[in-house]
Image 1 (cartoon, helix red, strand yellow):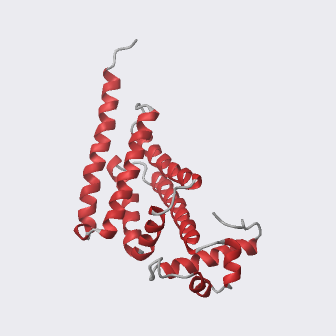
Image 2 (spheres, one colour):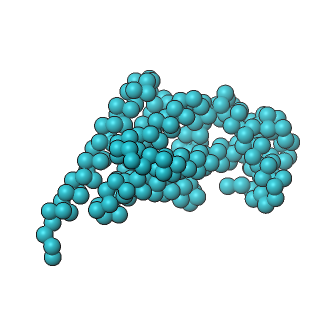
Image 3 (cartoon, rainbow, N blue to C red):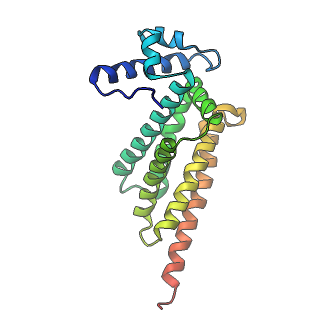
Length: 211
C-alpha cells in the first residue's frame, strides 16, 4: 500500500516514474539484490521522493503486482468483447496465450513479482482484483452457458483462474515447460474438462423434471 496517495497530477507522475523505474530494475535484477537507491536512480527521482510514497522495495513490487492484476482483468475484458462469435475454447485460450507470452518476455520481472507475493499475505485489495479476473472469466462462461446457474459458473471460473496461474508460473521455472506448445497442451486439456463439466450441468438441467 502506498504511504501517501497521489492526489495531484504531479504526484501521480512521480509514482508512475518510480514504478516504471522499478520495473526496469526488476527486469534484470533479482529483488533480493535490488535497492531503493538504484530504483530511484533509474526512475530519475531522489530516494527521498521515493520514500514519500513507498516504504520499501517490496512495497513497490507489490504495487507492480497489483497493477499487473489490473492489466490482466483489462486484457480479459477486451478479449471477451472482441472474441464474441468464436468457439468457447478459442475465447478462453486467447487471453491465456497473451499472458503466457507476456510472462515469457518479462521473465525476471514476473519471477520477482511472484516471489514477493509468495512471501507476503494477500491484501483485501489484491483479493478484490483477483475477484475481478474471476468475474471476467465467469462472464465469458456465462455467455457460453446461459442456462447454468451463476454459482456454478463462478466456481468453474475460479478453478480456471487458479490453474491458469499455476501453469503460467510453472512455465517460468520448470524446464519441462520450456515451450509454449507444451504449456498450451496442458491448458487445453484442463480447459476442455472445465467446459465439459459446464456442458454436463447444462444437459442435466434440461433433463430435470419440472416441479
